[in-house]
Image (cartoon, rainbow, N blue to C red):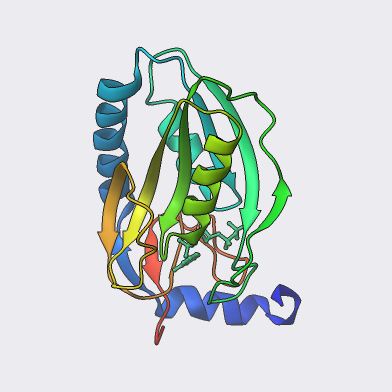
Amino acid sequence: MSQSLTREELQTVMAEADLLKSREEVEAALDRMAGEITAQLSDTMPVVYAIMNGGLVMAGQLLTRLNFPLEQGYLHATRYRGEFTGQTDLQWQAPPSIPMDGRTVLILDDIFDEGHTLAEVVKSCFAQGAKEVLTAVLVNKVHNRKNPDLAVDFVGCDVEDRYVFGYGMDYRSFWRNADGIYAVKGL
Ligand SMILES: O=P(O)(O)OC[C@H]1O[C@H](OP(=O)(O)OP(=O)(O)O)[C@H](O)[C@@H]1O
């Protein structure tokens, strides 16, 4: 899908997008989350997993704010795959590799949208023997289509019900690198 987009089209998407959260607002949210996570998990020697690809930027910026011993890994589970709506099946492209048996696990991701991705990842961690599993997201998209089986433990900020990109979140696989949280014009 991404191959059909030109550089000009992608520049227009950025030029026309609405800035929902500035870099300064995101940094403040990450500081607050780091404090909350430290207060709850600093004694637990947790395994901290980032969900690729979207969780990459958020994890990178959060991890250096956590000043206690932890192990860090990644997993890749995807259901949107460059589209604007998610598929019902979650595709596992890279399973977790650090053992979580009997451990506290913290899952990091960019966005809690409908919550199906996190719900399945959390379920899988418990199936692999995790003692407790907590979740942290940079963005909670506010709407009433949430998976009722999931409550996220740490949230950076709320955004309105629009298609957003930046800070790890993609517009048709591009603009994960945007230095703010933007909403696509018309979406
Ligand atoms: O709450 P949900 O509705 O399940 O959506 C949230 C998930 O969707 C995105 O991943 P995506 O499937 O796009 O994979 P990617 O990060 O590899 O692009 C995002 O990074 C979350 O993991």
